[in-house]
Image 1 (cartoon, rainbow, N blue to C red):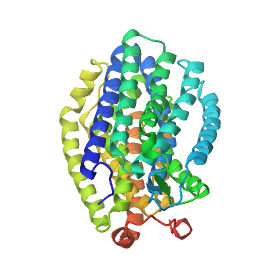
Image 2: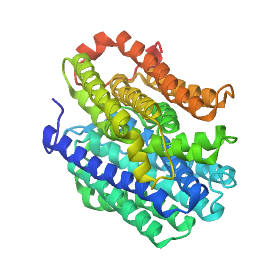
Image 3: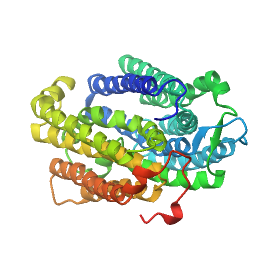
Image 4: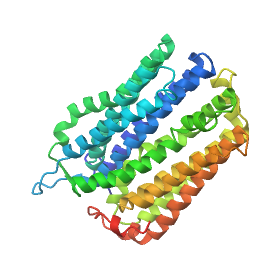
Length: 427
Protein backbone atom coordinates (compact mmCIF):
# COMPACT_ATOMS: atom_id res chain seq x y z
CA UNK A 1 0.00 0.00 0.00
CA UNK A 2 1.03 3.60 -0.37
CA UNK A 3 3.08 5.20 2.33
CA UNK A 4 0.98 7.73 4.17
CA UNK A 5 1.41 10.04 7.06
CA UNK A 6 -2.25 10.15 7.99
CA UNK A 7 -3.49 6.77 6.78
CA UNK A 8 -4.23 5.75 3.20
CA UNK A 9 -7.99 5.35 3.53
CA UNK A 10 -8.39 8.41 5.76
CA UNK A 11 -6.30 10.44 3.33
CA UNK A 12 -8.39 9.35 0.38
CA UNK A 13 -11.60 10.17 2.25
CA UNK A 14 -10.24 13.61 3.15
CA UNK A 15 -9.32 14.38 -0.46
CA UNK A 16 -12.62 13.04 -1.80
CA UNK A 17 -14.52 15.10 0.76
CA UNK A 18 -12.59 18.23 -0.20
CA UNK A 19 -13.14 17.48 -3.87
CA UNK A 20 -16.86 17.14 -3.17
CA UNK A 21 -16.87 20.56 -1.51
CA UNK A 22 -14.98 22.02 -4.49
CA UNK A 23 -17.33 20.29 -6.91
CA UNK A 24 -20.43 21.56 -5.16
CA UNK A 25 -18.98 25.07 -5.01
CA UNK A 26 -18.04 25.13 -8.68
CA UNK A 27 -21.30 23.47 -9.64
CA UNK A 28 -23.28 26.05 -7.67
CA UNK A 29 -21.49 28.88 -9.46
CA UNK A 30 -22.33 27.35 -12.83
CA UNK A 31 -25.95 26.93 -11.79
CA UNK A 32 -26.52 30.46 -10.53
CA UNK A 33 -24.55 32.24 -13.27
CA UNK A 34 -27.23 31.92 -15.99
CA UNK A 35 -29.85 33.08 -13.49
CA UNK A 36 -28.09 36.29 -12.45
CA UNK A 37 -26.33 37.27 -15.69
CA UNK A 38 -28.55 39.18 -18.14
CA UNK A 39 -28.83 37.39 -21.48
CA UNK A 40 -26.75 35.00 -23.57
CA UNK A 41 -23.96 37.49 -24.18
CA UNK A 42 -23.26 38.10 -20.49
CA UNK A 43 -23.42 34.39 -19.68
CA UNK A 44 -21.08 33.49 -22.54
CA UNK A 45 -18.65 36.21 -21.42
CA UNK A 46 -18.57 34.73 -17.91
CA UNK A 47 -18.36 31.14 -19.16
CA UNK A 48 -15.57 31.91 -21.62
CA UNK A 49 -13.42 33.69 -18.99
CA UNK A 50 -14.01 30.86 -16.50
CA UNK A 51 -13.15 28.34 -19.21
CA UNK A 52 -10.02 30.23 -20.26
CA UNK A 53 -8.77 30.67 -16.70
CA UNK A 54 -9.15 26.99 -15.88
CA UNK A 55 -7.86 25.90 -19.29
CA UNK A 56 -4.55 27.68 -18.78
CA UNK A 57 -4.56 26.97 -15.06
CA UNK A 58 -5.14 23.30 -15.77
CA UNK A 59 -2.13 23.35 -18.07
CA UNK A 60 0.01 24.78 -15.28
CA UNK A 61 -1.48 22.10 -13.02
CA UNK A 62 0.44 19.50 -15.02
CA UNK A 63 3.41 20.52 -12.88
CA UNK A 64 1.65 18.97 -9.89
CA UNK A 65 1.60 15.47 -11.34
CA UNK A 66 5.32 15.37 -12.12
CA UNK A 67 6.28 16.91 -8.77
CA UNK A 68 4.08 14.31 -7.02
CA UNK A 69 5.68 11.48 -9.01
CA UNK A 70 9.21 12.69 -8.27
CA UNK A 71 8.69 13.38 -4.53
CA UNK A 72 9.06 10.87 -1.71
CA UNK A 73 9.76 11.18 2.03
CA UNK A 74 13.44 11.75 2.80
CA UNK A 75 15.29 9.30 5.01
CA UNK A 76 17.30 10.91 7.79
CA UNK A 77 20.61 9.94 6.15
CA UNK A 78 19.64 11.09 2.64
CA UNK A 79 20.84 14.36 1.10
CA UNK A 80 18.35 17.21 1.12
CA UNK A 81 16.46 18.20 -2.00
CA UNK A 82 15.16 21.63 -2.92
CA UNK A 83 12.40 22.48 -5.36
CA UNK A 84 12.84 26.26 -5.03
CA UNK A 85 14.86 26.61 -8.24
CA UNK A 86 12.30 24.66 -10.22
CA UNK A 87 9.48 26.75 -8.73
CA UNK A 88 11.21 30.02 -9.68
CA UNK A 89 11.79 28.79 -13.23
CA UNK A 90 8.14 27.77 -13.50
CA UNK A 91 6.95 31.16 -12.17
CA UNK A 92 9.11 33.02 -14.67
CA UNK A 93 8.00 30.96 -17.66
CA UNK A 94 4.33 31.09 -16.71
CA UNK A 95 4.46 34.85 -16.11
CA UNK A 96 5.91 35.44 -19.58
CA UNK A 97 3.50 33.07 -21.33
CA UNK A 98 0.57 34.42 -19.33
CA UNK A 99 1.23 38.05 -20.29
CA UNK A 100 1.51 37.19 -23.98
CA UNK A 101 -1.67 35.09 -23.82
CA UNK A 102 -3.53 37.86 -21.96
CA UNK A 103 -2.68 40.41 -24.66
CA UNK A 104 -3.81 38.04 -27.41
CA UNK A 105 -6.99 36.99 -25.64
CA UNK A 106 -8.10 40.39 -24.36
CA UNK A 107 -10.11 41.36 -27.48
CA UNK A 108 -11.92 38.01 -27.64
CA UNK A 109 -12.07 35.82 -24.52
CA UNK A 110 -11.81 38.86 -22.20
CA UNK A 111 -13.94 41.23 -24.26
CA UNK A 112 -16.41 41.71 -21.38
CA UNK A 113 -13.71 43.69 -19.49
CA UNK A 114 -10.36 43.38 -21.32
CA UNK A 115 -7.91 45.10 -18.93
CA UNK A 116 -9.11 43.84 -15.53
CA UNK A 117 -9.75 40.31 -16.83
CA UNK A 118 -6.27 40.18 -18.40
CA UNK A 119 -4.71 41.22 -15.07
CA UNK A 120 -6.82 38.71 -13.16
CA UNK A 121 -5.83 36.00 -15.65
CA UNK A 122 -2.07 36.51 -15.15
CA UNK A 123 -2.45 36.73 -11.37
CA UNK A 124 -4.47 33.51 -11.36
CA UNK A 125 -1.82 31.67 -13.38
CA UNK A 126 0.96 32.67 -10.97
CA UNK A 127 -1.18 31.48 -8.07
CA UNK A 128 -1.76 28.23 -9.92
CA UNK A 129 2.01 27.63 -10.11
CA UNK A 130 2.29 27.94 -6.34
CA UNK A 131 -0.67 25.61 -5.89
CA UNK A 132 0.73 23.01 -8.31
CA UNK A 133 4.21 22.87 -6.77
CA UNK A 134 2.98 22.76 -3.16
CA UNK A 135 0.24 20.23 -3.85
CA UNK A 136 2.69 18.00 -5.73
CA UNK A 137 5.04 18.00 -2.75
CA UNK A 138 2.18 17.25 -0.38
CA UNK A 139 0.98 14.34 -2.53
CA UNK A 140 4.49 12.90 -2.65
CA UNK A 141 4.72 13.14 1.14
CA UNK A 142 1.16 11.80 1.56
CA UNK A 143 0.16 14.89 3.54
CA UNK A 144 -3.45 14.39 2.58
CA UNK A 145 -4.98 16.56 5.30
CA UNK A 146 -3.05 19.60 4.03
CA UNK A 147 -4.09 18.83 0.44
CA UNK A 148 -7.72 18.57 1.48
CA UNK A 149 -7.45 21.87 3.35
CA UNK A 150 -6.05 23.61 0.28
CA UNK A 151 -8.72 22.22 -2.06
CA UNK A 152 -11.47 23.22 0.34
CA UNK A 153 -10.12 26.68 1.10
CA UNK A 154 -9.60 27.47 -2.58
CA UNK A 155 -13.14 26.37 -3.46
CA UNK A 156 -14.82 28.17 -0.57
CA UNK A 157 -13.00 31.44 -1.23
CA UNK A 158 -13.84 31.33 -4.93
CA UNK A 159 -17.42 30.21 -4.42
CA UNK A 160 -18.17 32.91 -1.88
CA UNK A 161 -16.49 35.66 -3.89
CA UNK A 162 -18.04 34.82 -7.25
CA UNK A 163 -21.51 34.16 -5.79
CA UNK A 164 -21.44 37.50 -3.97
CA UNK A 165 -20.35 39.25 -7.15
CA UNK A 166 -23.10 37.64 -9.21
CA UNK A 167 -25.82 38.39 -6.66
CA UNK A 168 -24.72 42.03 -6.29
CA UNK A 169 -24.38 42.50 -10.05
CA UNK A 170 -20.66 43.29 -9.84
CA UNK A 171 -18.77 44.21 -13.04
CA UNK A 172 -17.19 41.31 -14.89
CA UNK A 173 -13.70 42.53 -13.99
CA UNK A 174 -14.44 42.16 -10.26
CA UNK A 175 -15.89 38.70 -10.80
CA UNK A 176 -12.73 37.80 -12.74
CA UNK A 177 -10.54 38.64 -9.73
CA UNK A 178 -12.89 36.62 -7.50
CA UNK A 179 -12.22 33.65 -9.78
CA UNK A 180 -8.44 34.14 -9.95
CA UNK A 181 -7.24 35.32 -6.53
CA UNK A 182 -8.08 32.17 -4.49
CA UNK A 183 -5.41 30.09 -6.27
CA UNK A 184 -2.50 31.98 -4.76
CA UNK A 185 -4.27 32.95 -1.56
CA UNK A 186 -5.24 29.40 -0.57
CA UNK A 187 -1.80 27.94 -1.35
CA UNK A 188 -0.04 30.72 0.59
CA UNK A 189 -2.21 30.17 3.67
CA UNK A 190 -1.72 26.39 3.59
CA UNK A 191 2.05 26.81 3.12
CA UNK A 192 2.20 28.88 6.31
CA UNK A 193 0.53 26.02 8.20
CA UNK A 194 2.30 23.07 6.52
CA UNK A 195 5.80 24.47 6.03
CA UNK A 196 7.39 22.58 8.93
CA UNK A 197 6.03 19.27 7.61
CA UNK A 198 7.48 19.88 4.15
CA UNK A 199 10.77 21.80 4.34
CA UNK A 200 13.76 19.45 4.39
CA UNK A 201 11.56 16.36 4.58
CA UNK A 202 11.25 15.40 0.92
CA UNK A 203 13.52 13.78 -1.68
CA UNK A 204 13.33 14.35 -5.42
CA UNK A 205 14.35 11.34 -7.52
CA UNK A 206 15.64 13.46 -10.44
CA UNK A 207 17.54 16.70 -11.01
CA UNK A 208 15.96 20.11 -11.53
CA UNK A 209 16.77 19.90 -15.24
CA UNK A 210 15.12 16.50 -15.65
CA UNK A 211 12.18 17.58 -13.51
CA UNK A 212 11.73 20.56 -15.82
CA UNK A 213 11.86 18.36 -18.93
CA UNK A 214 9.37 15.87 -17.50
CA UNK A 215 7.12 18.70 -16.37
CA UNK A 216 7.00 19.99 -19.95
CA UNK A 217 5.38 16.69 -20.97
CA UNK A 218 2.84 16.76 -18.15
CA UNK A 219 2.10 20.44 -18.84
CA UNK A 220 1.59 19.63 -22.53
CA UNK A 221 -0.80 16.85 -21.56
CA UNK A 222 -2.54 19.07 -19.01
CA UNK A 223 -2.98 21.75 -21.68
CA UNK A 224 -4.69 19.19 -23.88
CA UNK A 225 -6.78 18.06 -20.90
CA UNK A 226 -7.80 21.65 -20.29
CA UNK A 227 -8.87 21.99 -23.92
CA UNK A 228 -11.24 19.02 -23.68
CA UNK A 229 -12.46 19.56 -20.10
CA UNK A 230 -12.64 23.23 -19.08
CA UNK A 231 -11.82 24.73 -22.48
CA UNK A 232 -14.89 23.61 -24.38
CA UNK A 233 -16.81 26.90 -23.95
CA UNK A 234 -13.78 28.70 -25.38
CA UNK A 235 -13.62 26.22 -28.27
CA UNK A 236 -17.34 26.59 -28.95
CA UNK A 237 -16.96 30.37 -28.96
CA UNK A 238 -13.95 30.18 -31.30
CA UNK A 239 -14.87 27.45 -33.76
CA UNK A 240 -18.66 27.84 -33.86
CA UNK A 241 -18.82 31.61 -34.39
CA UNK A 242 -21.65 31.43 -36.92
CA UNK A 243 -23.86 29.32 -34.66
CA UNK A 244 -26.92 30.70 -32.93
CA UNK A 245 -25.95 32.20 -29.55
CA UNK A 246 -28.81 30.44 -27.79
CA UNK A 247 -27.75 27.05 -29.21
CA UNK A 248 -24.12 27.57 -28.17
CA UNK A 249 -25.17 28.78 -24.72
CA UNK A 250 -27.36 25.67 -24.33
CA UNK A 251 -24.49 23.38 -25.37
CA UNK A 252 -22.15 25.16 -22.97
CA UNK A 253 -24.58 24.70 -20.08
CA UNK A 254 -25.25 21.01 -20.92
CA UNK A 255 -21.53 20.24 -21.09
CA UNK A 256 -20.85 22.11 -17.85
CA UNK A 257 -23.66 20.45 -15.89
CA UNK A 258 -23.53 16.85 -17.12
CA UNK A 259 -19.78 16.23 -17.41
CA UNK A 260 -18.67 17.55 -14.03
CA UNK A 261 -19.81 14.64 -11.79
CA UNK A 262 -17.68 12.12 -13.71
CA UNK A 263 -14.65 14.16 -14.68
CA UNK A 264 -13.97 16.46 -11.75
CA UNK A 265 -13.39 13.76 -9.07
CA UNK A 266 -10.91 11.81 -11.20
CA UNK A 267 -9.17 14.99 -12.35
CA UNK A 268 -8.72 15.96 -8.72
CA UNK A 269 -7.39 12.49 -7.84
CA UNK A 270 -4.86 12.15 -10.67
CA UNK A 271 -1.83 12.92 -8.50
CA UNK A 272 -3.22 10.65 -5.76
CA UNK A 273 -3.54 7.83 -8.30
CA UNK A 274 -0.01 8.42 -9.58
CA UNK A 275 1.47 8.13 -6.09
CA UNK A 276 -0.82 5.24 -5.14
CA UNK A 277 0.12 3.19 -8.21
CA UNK A 278 3.79 4.09 -7.78
CA UNK A 279 3.76 2.66 -4.27
CA UNK A 280 1.59 -0.37 -5.04
CA UNK A 281 3.95 -3.34 -5.06
CA UNK A 282 1.85 -5.72 -7.16
CA UNK A 283 -1.36 -6.01 -9.17
CA UNK A 284 -1.08 -2.57 -10.69
CA UNK A 285 -2.73 -3.66 -13.94
CA UNK A 286 -5.52 -5.34 -12.01
CA UNK A 287 -6.12 -2.13 -10.06
CA UNK A 288 -6.32 -0.10 -13.25
CA UNK A 289 -8.78 -2.56 -14.80
CA UNK A 290 -10.94 -2.52 -11.66
CA UNK A 291 -11.04 1.27 -11.71
CA UNK A 292 -12.00 1.30 -15.38
CA UNK A 293 -14.74 -1.28 -14.76
CA UNK A 294 -16.17 0.73 -11.87
CA UNK A 295 -16.07 3.85 -14.01
CA UNK A 296 -17.96 2.09 -16.82
CA UNK A 297 -20.70 1.05 -14.37
CA UNK A 298 -21.03 4.59 -13.03
CA UNK A 299 -21.13 5.94 -16.58
CA UNK A 300 -23.97 3.57 -17.51
CA UNK A 301 -26.03 4.90 -14.62
CA UNK A 302 -25.09 8.45 -15.62
CA UNK A 303 -26.29 7.92 -19.19
CA UNK A 304 -29.63 6.60 -17.94
CA UNK A 305 -30.06 9.58 -15.62
CA UNK A 306 -29.06 12.00 -18.40
CA UNK A 307 -31.72 10.58 -20.73
CA UNK A 308 -34.33 10.68 -18.00
CA UNK A 309 -33.58 13.94 -16.21
CA UNK A 310 -31.16 15.87 -18.44
CA UNK A 311 -33.62 17.99 -20.44
CA UNK A 312 -35.72 18.76 -17.36
CA UNK A 313 -32.63 19.74 -15.31
CA UNK A 314 -31.32 22.12 -17.97
CA UNK A 315 -34.72 23.78 -18.18
CA UNK A 316 -34.92 24.21 -14.41
CA UNK A 317 -31.38 25.53 -14.07
CA UNK A 318 -31.81 28.11 -16.81
CA UNK A 319 -35.39 29.06 -15.87
CA UNK A 320 -36.52 27.78 -19.26
CA UNK A 321 -34.11 29.92 -21.31
CA UNK A 322 -32.05 26.96 -22.56
CA UNK A 323 -33.01 23.43 -23.58
CA UNK A 324 -31.52 20.11 -24.66
CA UNK A 325 -32.68 16.69 -25.77
CA UNK A 326 -32.06 13.24 -24.20
CA UNK A 327 -29.59 12.14 -26.91
CA UNK A 328 -27.41 15.21 -26.45
CA UNK A 329 -27.34 14.78 -22.66
CA UNK A 330 -26.48 11.07 -23.00
CA UNK A 331 -23.67 11.67 -25.51
CA UNK A 332 -22.12 14.32 -23.28
CA UNK A 333 -22.03 11.80 -20.39
CA UNK A 334 -20.43 9.16 -22.66
CA UNK A 335 -17.80 11.73 -23.61
CA UNK A 336 -17.18 12.50 -19.94
CA UNK A 337 -16.76 8.80 -19.14
CA UNK A 338 -14.04 8.41 -21.76
CA UNK A 339 -12.19 11.49 -20.50
CA UNK A 340 -12.44 10.14 -16.94
CA UNK A 341 -11.08 6.77 -18.11
CA UNK A 342 -8.06 8.57 -19.55
CA UNK A 343 -7.37 10.02 -16.09
CA UNK A 344 -6.99 6.44 -14.84
CA UNK A 345 -4.88 5.15 -17.75
CA UNK A 346 -2.80 8.31 -17.65
CA UNK A 347 -1.95 7.79 -13.99
CA UNK A 348 -0.72 4.28 -14.81
CA UNK A 349 1.51 5.60 -17.58
CA UNK A 350 2.98 8.37 -15.41
CA UNK A 351 3.82 5.77 -12.76
CA UNK A 352 6.47 4.41 -15.13
CA UNK A 353 7.47 7.83 -16.48
CA UNK A 354 5.86 7.06 -19.84
CA UNK A 355 5.43 10.78 -20.29
CA UNK A 356 5.35 10.70 -24.07
CA UNK A 357 2.56 8.13 -24.24
CA UNK A 358 0.66 10.00 -21.54
CA UNK A 359 0.93 13.31 -23.39
CA UNK A 360 0.24 11.75 -26.79
CA UNK A 361 -3.20 10.50 -25.77
CA UNK A 362 -4.32 13.88 -24.50
CA UNK A 363 -2.83 15.76 -27.46
CA UNK A 364 -4.76 13.48 -29.82
CA UNK A 365 -7.99 14.38 -27.98
CA UNK A 366 -7.29 18.10 -28.18
CA UNK A 367 -6.32 18.11 -31.84
CA UNK A 368 -9.25 15.91 -32.82
CA UNK A 369 -11.66 18.14 -30.85
CA UNK A 370 -10.45 21.28 -32.62
CA UNK A 371 -10.43 19.64 -36.05
CA UNK A 372 -13.93 18.20 -35.70
CA UNK A 373 -15.36 21.49 -34.39
CA UNK A 374 -13.71 23.37 -37.22
CA UNK A 375 -15.14 21.19 -40.00
CA UNK A 376 -18.22 23.02 -41.31
CA UNK A 377 -19.94 19.95 -42.80
CA UNK A 378 -22.45 19.58 -39.95
CA UNK A 379 -24.79 22.00 -38.17
CA UNK A 380 -23.68 23.46 -34.86
CA UNK A 381 -25.12 20.96 -32.38
CA UNK A 382 -24.31 17.70 -34.26
CA UNK A 383 -20.78 18.97 -34.96
CA UNK A 384 -20.22 19.61 -31.27
CA UNK A 385 -21.52 16.16 -30.32
CA UNK A 386 -19.27 14.42 -32.85
CA UNK A 387 -16.25 16.28 -31.45
CA UNK A 388 -17.27 15.48 -27.87
CA UNK A 389 -17.50 11.73 -28.49
CA UNK A 390 -15.00 10.88 -31.24
CA UNK A 391 -12.05 12.89 -29.90
CA UNK A 392 -11.83 11.24 -26.43
CA UNK A 393 -12.44 7.83 -28.03
CA UNK A 394 -9.29 8.30 -30.12
CA UNK A 395 -7.27 9.50 -27.12
CA UNK A 396 -8.42 6.64 -24.92
CA UNK A 397 -7.38 4.21 -27.66
CA UNK A 398 -3.85 5.67 -27.62
CA UNK A 399 -3.65 5.31 -23.83
CA UNK A 400 -5.01 1.76 -23.78
CA UNK A 401 -2.47 0.64 -26.40
CA UNK A 402 0.32 2.20 -24.33
CA UNK A 403 -0.98 0.65 -21.09
CA UNK A 404 -1.20 -2.75 -22.75
CA UNK A 405 2.40 -2.50 -23.96
CA UNK A 406 3.45 -1.54 -20.42
CA UNK A 407 1.43 -4.29 -18.73
CA UNK A 408 4.40 -6.39 -17.48
CA UNK A 409 6.05 -3.34 -15.90
CA UNK A 410 2.80 -2.11 -14.39
CA UNK A 411 2.39 -5.48 -12.72
CA UNK A 412 5.93 -6.19 -11.59
CA UNK A 413 7.89 -2.99 -10.97
CA UNK A 414 8.63 -2.50 -7.27
CA UNK A 415 7.67 0.59 -5.38
CA UNK A 416 11.18 2.04 -5.35
CA UNK A 417 11.57 5.54 -6.85
CA UNK A 418 10.99 5.32 -10.59
CA UNK A 419 14.01 5.68 -12.89
CA UNK A 420 13.31 7.99 -15.77
CA UNK A 421 12.88 6.06 -19.02
CA UNK A 422 12.19 8.77 -21.52
CA UNK A 423 15.02 7.58 -23.72
CA UNK A 424 13.48 4.09 -23.81
CA UNK A 425 9.88 5.21 -24.22
CA UNK A 426 8.62 3.64 -27.46
CA UNK A 427 5.63 5.98 -27.53
